[in-house]
Length: 392
Image (cartoon, one colour):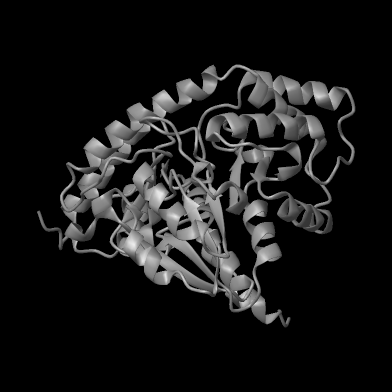
């Protein structure tokens, strides 16, 4: 079969590939500890489930408006306005099945072949995948371990030019857990506000932050009209399988994204939107409890990793990922990730799954129980100590 040339430029998300391999090993009788998948291991809050069940009983099983139901968009607009300190109107909100459609639809609407997109590296792999798929030019911006995986601001200034159409930010960040400092955001806003470009701010982990409050690039002068905020329900409310996300953007772009939604998916499932409404308007205690549990797991995971020969790990400020530097083991990222899966029964991701600058790192998701994290740390430590080439 002959495929279109653009399919050769389409990447993938390695987490799902590793998950399949780990499940295959489990089917063979192996015990695998899953630290590869970026998914909260908590149950969706009960009030959200009940809202969906009630919606199904009441017939919310038909097509809805492509942009999303107005009452949900009103609540999202109010939530984003309050949490980001900006004015937001419902017509700026588009509700989509998951967060990725906002990435894809926004890029489809904005990018022509040859346009340049600056994006964090290591970073979520779908950024680069979509950029290449559309024939645009990816411009990776290296994240600095020494600065808590913040962006290289000098590097950003050097990459910006008249061909730059989009800058992608992600804070808190996948895979590093890094959070952009407010001073950095102010400088990024200063660099971008005077240029003919937009910023796609992936804020899907905005509620999973361990110190202070989330700050969006959209809150800085000149940036509300230049920012696309990507957020959703998957991480905050443990609703990954519900496929419910949203974007907040300039109204003109929202109309274009709505048209792409019509062509791609028609609309987002009606009953899941009722669940989303319940999530935002209901008790937030489950979110707070989940974040506190993640904080405990983070501290356990990072302390344990820093005891393993050849590892060093900074303390992530948000999300639920640890991203240790493993260059001291003498092994490549991919080699060590393979060893841990096959020999130690610990599924994790090579840093190279997140781009060229991920070499020398592994990503561990601590969205798992403390018991399993302790067990995984013991297995990792044993595997590293038993293999040759490890430097103290």
